[in-house]
Amino acid sequence: MNIEALFQKFAGIYGESKTEKTEVYFAPGRVNLIGEHTDYNGGFVFPCALDFGTFLAIRKNNTGTLRLASINFEQRGEISLNKSFTKIGDAWFNYPVGVVDQFYKNNKTIEGCDFLYSGDIPNGAGLSSSASIEVVTAFALNSMFNLGFDLLTLVKLSQKAENQFIGVNCGIMDQFAVTFGAENKAIFLNCATLDYELVPLVMNGHKLIISNTNKRRGLADSKYNERRGECETAVEKLSKAGKIENLSQLDYPSFIKIIDIIGDDTVARRAKHVISENQRAMDAVNALKANDLITFGRLMNESHDSLRDDYEVTGIELDTLVEEARKIPGVPGSRMTGAGFGGCTVSLVSENAINDFIDNVGKNYYKRTGLTADFYIAGVGAGVHKVE
Ligand code: GLA
Image: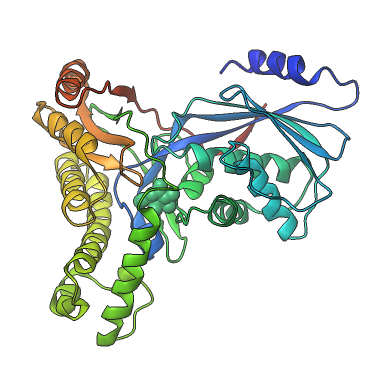
């Protein structure tokens, strides 16, 4: 989005102000390279921030209301700051209002503001359009009203907005990645301690290609919360052999020795995915640091297969995109990314193979599913910031 056009659109909707200044903020989307469905299990994730995301133009309006508009949706919101906040159906502006609700729950108040959002993350595609809008809102309000929250607190408040206001029991990965992302670096995050390391993405002539199944994912009504429940059951059962707080406290060999005490094949496979994926995330980061993209790609492939067979969150569209991607020479690895059930894949593709990849994966995916995929060559950008 061109910032000038955003300012113009803002003035078109809300008029000019002689006293208040319009500010612009940006938060990216994210793609997760490996470590899937590990965040809410106290494990490792390895996402990076994208170079596209959500812009927010915002200005105080001295009316005691939040007026919310978006370039992406026609629906507008007008929310009074005098009463408690309630979710309105599946309105897009529940995300910013959920953040404001969290601020008030933490005894911070704000004044009325006019908001105009403009996003270029496809919605429901597993690239964290929701975390992006939450975090850009939290960051902007924190800065405009000098609320004094540090970045990690903004991450946690945004996650809580999603858990409590929106009703999606997501982990912390998405909000963390869109906040702490850095250009050409991926974030190796320990979700149990929230310690993290920015790892340079040295790609040796490869690019990350995101392929969108264009099958809407709908995290809220998907089986996401059901998977979380299954992981909790696994923790409870496995604790009979020695108390654990989360699945990531077990390494794979120790887990395999006691897997039978789970006594339920489905729950056992869910736990097997999480514990093996946690090891793969650690191995992948080491492979990247050692400049070994072949091993990195193999681990991506193993991650997808585990999400398909054991965690069962892929589906025909994601599996087809991945199968077609792996047929192209010059593709060390390809996997689904995000929650699954539709959304996107991420593939490591040699620069010479990009055209071949987009042509053939697109053609064959259409032949097999009747759907048209979209492809983005992912640029890895910075986390949330003010646009000066
Ligand atoms: C969604 C959630 C994240 C994470 C992923 C799966 O993106 O928001 O917290 O659980 O799914 O890895």
